Length: 173
Image (cartoon, rainbow, N blue to C red):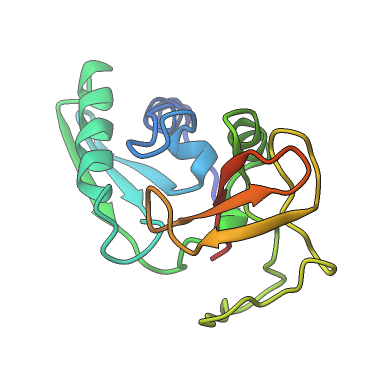
């Protein structure tokens, strides 16, 4: 485990409090994309950011928002570096982030990673009986997939068969 200086911990908290541009109910820390903050000298900071997927269009907005937050906090020079390894996984979303997604009406991703690389398939990897996607409105496991894509590439559109409400599901990655 990496030990942070008090200043690095403070700046990590500032950068981590920035809301995600696509899901503003979550902070970058809760989403798990903020990897590290390194103080280079008295007024220079480097931030490591891992996108949810390579080519994520929100990385530029995240970087600018982090830079703005740290400059507002008194840091003169901020560099945000994209780090692709280790790759981000939906398992990196914090428990608080999952709770907030559910309260916002988005089914959080199911926990999946044990260790090693994440397998990618074109079809469903689990059956509803093994690990159902629960409705964030009523909690029912009786849901159906309407579309593999929703408002963003990382979400699918589902419907609850119990309460009949449609909802987004943050897909596992």
